[in-house]
Length: 280
Image (cartoon, rainbow, N blue to C red; front, side, top):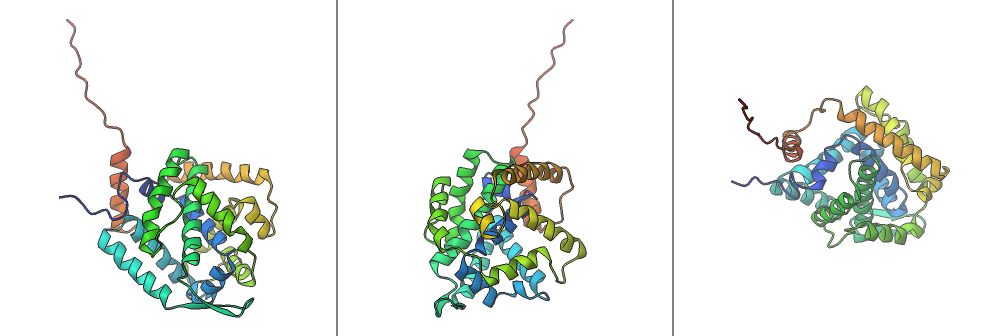
Protein backbone atom coordinates (compact mmCIF):
# COMPACT_ATOMS: atom_id res chain seq x y z
CA UNK A 1 0.00 0.00 0.00
CA UNK A 2 1.18 3.54 -0.77
CA UNK A 3 1.70 5.57 2.38
CA UNK A 4 -0.08 8.92 2.61
CA UNK A 5 2.62 11.60 2.91
CA UNK A 6 0.26 14.56 2.60
CA UNK A 7 1.29 17.59 0.55
CA UNK A 8 4.91 16.66 -0.06
CA UNK A 9 6.78 13.44 0.71
CA UNK A 10 10.33 12.07 0.98
CA UNK A 11 11.22 12.94 -2.62
CA UNK A 12 10.28 16.61 -2.14
CA UNK A 13 12.67 19.48 -1.57
CA UNK A 14 10.29 20.73 1.12
CA UNK A 15 10.94 17.78 3.40
CA UNK A 16 14.71 18.18 3.02
CA UNK A 17 14.51 21.88 3.85
CA UNK A 18 12.21 21.64 6.85
CA UNK A 19 14.18 18.86 8.51
CA UNK A 20 17.23 21.13 8.84
CA UNK A 21 17.68 22.78 12.28
CA UNK A 22 19.06 25.92 10.60
CA UNK A 23 15.54 26.59 9.34
CA UNK A 24 14.69 28.01 12.77
CA UNK A 25 16.49 31.09 11.48
CA UNK A 26 14.11 31.12 8.51
CA UNK A 27 11.10 31.00 10.80
CA UNK A 28 12.26 33.99 12.81
CA UNK A 29 13.20 35.85 9.62
CA UNK A 30 9.63 35.34 8.43
CA UNK A 31 8.25 36.83 11.67
CA UNK A 32 10.48 39.88 11.26
CA UNK A 33 9.33 40.45 7.67
CA UNK A 34 5.68 39.82 8.45
CA UNK A 35 5.86 42.40 11.24
CA UNK A 36 6.66 45.15 8.74
CA UNK A 37 3.17 44.98 7.18
CA UNK A 38 1.13 47.39 9.34
CA UNK A 39 -2.26 45.70 8.99
CA UNK A 40 -0.90 42.18 9.33
CA UNK A 41 1.05 43.24 12.41
CA UNK A 42 -1.84 45.10 14.00
CA UNK A 43 -4.30 42.32 13.32
CA UNK A 44 -1.93 39.83 14.90
CA UNK A 45 -1.14 42.10 17.84
CA UNK A 46 -4.80 42.73 18.58
CA UNK A 47 -5.83 39.06 18.44
CA UNK A 48 -2.86 36.85 19.25
CA UNK A 49 -1.55 35.49 22.54
CA UNK A 50 1.97 35.77 21.13
CA UNK A 51 2.31 39.11 22.87
CA UNK A 52 1.15 37.93 26.28
CA UNK A 53 4.27 36.82 28.20
CA UNK A 54 2.22 34.20 30.07
CA UNK A 55 0.84 32.65 26.88
CA UNK A 56 3.48 33.37 24.24
CA UNK A 57 5.36 30.06 24.48
CA UNK A 58 2.28 27.85 24.20
CA UNK A 59 1.02 29.99 21.29
CA UNK A 60 4.38 29.69 19.56
CA UNK A 61 4.33 25.92 20.05
CA UNK A 62 0.94 25.73 18.32
CA UNK A 63 2.36 27.59 15.32
CA UNK A 64 5.32 25.20 15.15
CA UNK A 65 2.91 22.26 15.40
CA UNK A 66 0.83 23.62 12.52
CA UNK A 67 3.85 24.01 10.24
CA UNK A 68 4.99 20.50 11.18
CA UNK A 69 1.63 18.91 10.37
CA UNK A 70 1.25 20.95 7.17
CA UNK A 71 4.67 19.83 6.02
CA UNK A 72 4.88 16.22 7.21
CA UNK A 73 1.32 15.21 8.07
CA UNK A 74 -1.03 12.88 6.20
CA UNK A 75 -3.72 14.47 4.02
CA UNK A 76 -6.49 14.17 6.62
CA UNK A 77 -4.29 15.77 9.31
CA UNK A 78 -3.31 18.63 6.99
CA UNK A 79 -6.96 19.30 6.17
CA UNK A 80 -7.87 19.18 9.86
CA UNK A 81 -5.29 21.74 11.05
CA UNK A 82 -5.69 23.97 7.99
CA UNK A 83 -9.45 24.00 8.42
CA UNK A 84 -9.03 25.02 12.04
CA UNK A 85 -6.73 27.90 11.05
CA UNK A 86 -9.09 29.06 8.28
CA UNK A 87 -12.07 29.08 10.66
CA UNK A 88 -10.11 30.98 13.29
CA UNK A 89 -8.90 33.64 10.85
CA UNK A 90 -12.41 34.03 9.40
CA UNK A 91 -13.77 34.90 12.83
CA UNK A 92 -11.25 37.65 13.61
CA UNK A 93 -10.96 41.31 12.65
CA UNK A 94 -8.42 44.05 13.22
CA UNK A 95 -8.57 47.82 13.56
CA UNK A 96 -6.33 50.22 11.65
CA UNK A 97 -5.84 53.41 13.72
CA UNK A 98 -4.34 55.22 10.73
CA UNK A 99 -7.53 54.96 8.67
CA UNK A 100 -10.20 54.06 11.21
CA UNK A 101 -11.04 50.94 9.18
CA UNK A 102 -11.89 47.51 10.49
CA UNK A 103 -10.48 44.67 8.39
CA UNK A 104 -10.65 40.90 8.25
CA UNK A 105 -7.60 38.91 9.23
CA UNK A 106 -8.28 36.44 6.43
CA UNK A 107 -8.18 39.09 3.71
CA UNK A 108 -6.35 37.44 0.78
CA UNK A 109 -3.70 40.15 0.63
CA UNK A 110 -2.83 39.58 4.30
CA UNK A 111 -2.76 35.81 3.94
CA UNK A 112 -0.53 36.13 0.89
CA UNK A 113 1.98 38.36 2.69
CA UNK A 114 2.26 35.93 5.61
CA UNK A 115 2.62 32.94 3.29
CA UNK A 116 5.09 34.56 0.87
CA UNK A 117 7.39 35.94 3.55
CA UNK A 118 7.45 32.55 5.29
CA UNK A 119 8.31 30.68 2.10
CA UNK A 120 10.81 33.31 0.93
CA UNK A 121 12.54 33.19 4.30
CA UNK A 122 12.93 29.42 4.28
CA UNK A 123 14.16 29.54 0.68
CA UNK A 124 16.66 32.30 1.40
CA UNK A 125 18.11 30.55 4.44
CA UNK A 126 18.28 27.23 2.59
CA UNK A 127 20.18 28.88 -0.27
CA UNK A 128 22.57 30.92 1.86
CA UNK A 129 23.33 28.06 4.26
CA UNK A 130 24.34 25.82 1.36
CA UNK A 131 21.42 23.44 1.61
CA UNK A 132 19.93 24.31 -1.82
CA UNK A 133 21.31 25.60 -5.08
CA UNK A 134 19.33 27.85 -7.42
CA UNK A 135 17.50 24.92 -9.02
CA UNK A 136 16.60 23.56 -5.59
CA UNK A 137 15.15 26.92 -4.58
CA UNK A 138 13.02 27.01 -7.72
CA UNK A 139 11.67 23.56 -6.96
CA UNK A 140 10.99 24.49 -3.33
CA UNK A 141 9.00 27.53 -4.43
CA UNK A 142 6.97 25.46 -6.90
CA UNK A 143 6.11 22.98 -4.17
CA UNK A 144 5.16 25.75 -1.73
CA UNK A 145 2.02 26.61 -3.71
CA UNK A 146 0.44 23.49 -2.19
CA UNK A 147 0.84 25.02 1.28
CA UNK A 148 -0.76 28.26 0.06
CA UNK A 149 -3.85 26.47 -1.18
CA UNK A 150 -4.65 24.83 2.15
CA UNK A 151 -5.02 28.24 3.81
CA UNK A 152 -7.39 29.44 1.11
CA UNK A 153 -5.10 31.11 -1.43
CA UNK A 154 -5.76 30.31 -5.08
CA UNK A 155 -2.32 31.43 -6.17
CA UNK A 156 1.07 32.38 -4.76
CA UNK A 157 4.58 33.08 -6.07
CA UNK A 158 6.02 29.87 -7.48
CA UNK A 159 9.45 31.02 -8.70
CA UNK A 160 12.27 33.28 -7.58
CA UNK A 161 11.29 35.90 -10.15
CA UNK A 162 7.64 35.90 -9.05
CA UNK A 163 8.65 36.11 -5.38
CA UNK A 164 10.93 39.10 -6.01
CA UNK A 165 8.23 40.84 -8.04
CA UNK A 166 5.58 40.23 -5.38
CA UNK A 167 7.68 41.45 -2.45
CA UNK A 168 8.75 44.54 -4.39
CA UNK A 169 5.08 45.29 -5.11
CA UNK A 170 4.24 45.30 -1.39
CA UNK A 171 7.24 47.33 -0.22
CA UNK A 172 5.47 50.74 -0.50
CA UNK A 173 2.94 49.54 2.11
CA UNK A 174 5.55 48.47 4.67
CA UNK A 175 6.48 50.49 7.74
CA UNK A 176 7.69 50.15 11.30
CA UNK A 177 4.74 50.44 13.71
CA UNK A 178 4.62 50.59 17.49
CA UNK A 179 3.14 47.09 17.45
CA UNK A 180 6.11 45.82 15.44
CA UNK A 181 8.56 47.41 17.87
CA UNK A 182 6.89 45.66 20.78
CA UNK A 183 6.78 42.35 18.93
CA UNK A 184 10.44 42.47 17.99
CA UNK A 185 11.35 43.56 21.49
CA UNK A 186 9.74 40.39 22.81
CA UNK A 187 11.93 38.29 20.51
CA UNK A 188 15.12 39.81 21.90
CA UNK A 189 13.98 39.79 25.52
CA UNK A 190 11.55 36.86 25.86
CA UNK A 191 9.59 36.58 29.10
CA UNK A 192 7.48 33.48 29.17
CA UNK A 193 6.99 30.01 30.56
CA UNK A 194 9.43 28.66 28.00
CA UNK A 195 12.35 26.52 29.22
CA UNK A 196 15.47 28.44 30.21
CA UNK A 197 17.50 27.12 27.27
CA UNK A 198 14.83 28.39 24.89
CA UNK A 199 14.88 31.83 26.46
CA UNK A 200 18.64 31.91 25.94
CA UNK A 201 18.51 30.61 22.35
CA UNK A 202 15.67 32.78 21.04
CA UNK A 203 17.50 36.14 21.20
CA UNK A 204 20.55 34.58 19.50
CA UNK A 205 18.44 33.15 16.67
CA UNK A 206 16.50 36.42 16.37
CA UNK A 207 19.75 38.40 16.09
CA UNK A 208 21.04 36.19 13.28
CA UNK A 209 17.65 36.30 11.57
CA UNK A 210 17.72 40.09 11.65
CA UNK A 211 21.05 40.15 9.81
CA UNK A 212 19.63 37.91 7.05
CA UNK A 213 16.86 40.37 6.13
CA UNK A 214 17.04 42.28 2.84
CA UNK A 215 18.92 45.56 3.17
CA UNK A 216 15.74 47.63 2.78
CA UNK A 217 14.09 45.67 5.62
CA UNK A 218 17.09 46.14 7.92
CA UNK A 219 16.87 49.87 7.27
CA UNK A 220 13.20 49.88 8.31
CA UNK A 221 14.36 48.32 11.59
CA UNK A 222 16.86 51.16 11.96
CA UNK A 223 19.90 49.03 11.13
CA UNK A 224 22.55 49.61 8.47
CA UNK A 225 21.83 47.86 5.19
CA UNK A 226 25.39 47.32 4.01
CA UNK A 227 26.95 44.44 2.00
CA UNK A 228 29.39 43.28 4.76
CA UNK A 229 26.40 42.34 6.89
CA UNK A 230 25.14 40.08 4.09
CA UNK A 231 28.51 38.37 3.75
CA UNK A 232 28.84 37.84 7.49
CA UNK A 233 25.31 36.45 7.80
CA UNK A 234 25.87 33.98 4.96
CA UNK A 235 29.14 32.77 6.48
CA UNK A 236 27.44 32.32 9.85
CA UNK A 237 24.56 30.37 8.31
CA UNK A 238 26.95 27.98 6.58
CA UNK A 239 28.90 27.41 9.79
CA UNK A 240 25.69 26.94 11.76
CA UNK A 241 24.34 24.35 9.32
CA UNK A 242 27.63 22.44 9.41
CA UNK A 243 27.57 22.42 13.21
CA UNK A 244 23.94 21.41 13.64
CA UNK A 245 24.28 18.55 11.17
CA UNK A 246 26.87 16.97 13.47
CA UNK A 247 24.57 17.08 16.50
CA UNK A 248 22.05 14.37 17.47
CA UNK A 249 18.49 14.82 16.24
CA UNK A 250 16.35 16.82 18.60
CA UNK A 251 13.19 15.04 19.87
CA UNK A 252 10.29 15.33 17.44
CA UNK A 253 6.76 13.95 16.87
CA UNK A 254 6.51 10.50 15.23
CA UNK A 255 5.65 11.90 11.78
CA UNK A 256 8.82 14.01 11.73
CA UNK A 257 10.95 11.13 12.97
CA UNK A 258 9.54 9.00 10.15
CA UNK A 259 10.23 11.80 7.68
CA UNK A 260 13.86 11.91 8.81
CA UNK A 261 14.21 8.18 8.19
CA UNK A 262 12.59 8.31 4.76
CA UNK A 263 14.62 11.30 3.59
CA UNK A 264 17.84 9.69 4.72
CA UNK A 265 16.93 6.53 2.83
CA UNK A 266 16.08 8.57 -0.27
CA UNK A 267 19.28 10.62 -0.20
CA UNK A 268 21.79 7.94 0.83
CA UNK A 269 23.51 6.45 -2.22
CA UNK A 270 22.97 2.72 -2.64
CA UNK A 271 26.22 0.80 -2.48
CA UNK A 272 26.38 -1.73 -5.26
CA UNK A 273 28.10 -5.06 -4.63
CA UNK A 274 30.89 -5.91 -7.02
CA UNK A 275 32.16 -9.49 -7.08
CA UNK A 276 35.83 -9.94 -6.36
CA UNK A 277 37.79 -11.80 -8.98
CA UNK A 278 40.03 -14.54 -7.72
CA UNK A 279 43.27 -14.63 -9.68
CA UNK A 280 45.26 -17.84 -9.45
